[in-house]
Length: 239
Image 1: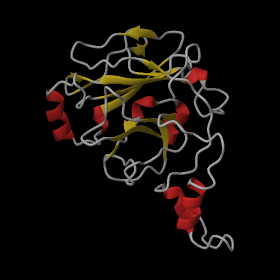
Image 2: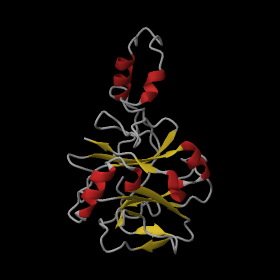
Image 3: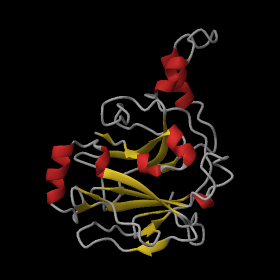
């Protein structure tokens, strides 16, 4: 969520310059530089992550090829059309150790969005109504709920837990699928065996595509455990 003065979660923010280690190249797709959309400072999140990430993970830079903002390179449209909107090469997550990361300006043709610092707070969230996690619920779990659809609708509306997550920007946890379809992998498979990294909602300067949606990044769980963020992929949820 947007940070009040003095409440930023480390370097966590939307937009601005990337935080990269010296010598790390700026990510590209077919020769076009990706645009920095967000930085997540994982050092500012413990103990909420409870050992989810390897020690020293530091900063995560989330990149994607910008095709929608006023700054977008027109050539990016052709790349996106050829690759498909869910192509893994359209986005990257680049990790940087906090003690070595420096603010890095982008190449001239990358979009640069005004930085908006983020504060962080823990929250509780049920699986989204379209999340496959609900498929494992036994409908015979009580006299008042003989229908899973009724149960999850009430849990997500009438019984919402005080202090639950309200921000549309979310790190880790279970993503929300505003289109009702949910993020999918580039080959059309679901995200079983993957872990959610970041959910990013539309901003004033940037939105994901066409009529909008939310950008997500996901990573195979085994890659997350060892800190191999080169395997992270964009998993957009587009209207």
